[in-house]
Length: 136
Image (tube, rainbow, N blue to C red; front, side):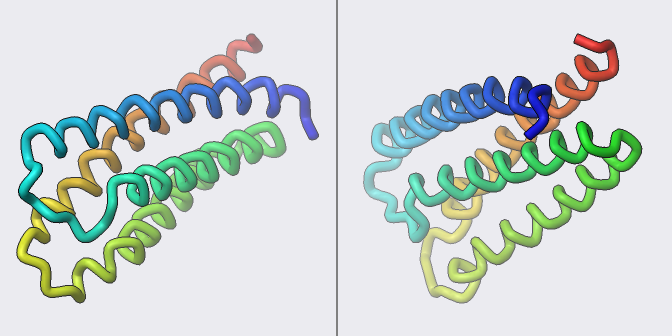
């Protein structure tokens, strides 16, 4: 295993874990405090586990691809993002086929963290590529 790959991946894993715990706890607190009467089909912990695993895999693949072949990083990122969108649809498929009264709340519970995780992912990948390009 490439030592540069591990040096860049371990700090990201810690950042992602901390981000997931903080945002997930805040999300759960907001729902319990302000919307206790609403029932959601998909539990918050499943949403955050999904986002954590998908972002971790995508970052791992992109950073590994960067250290193996620097030319195809953008293509790998774009294909990975497309696959991530398809996985999100599959994750939400049971919700779309169910007859819940609060589908809008469930969709918001999924996509607000989705975009927060996407922002972290894009920031981390661009930081990785900038640092690697500058040689640090």
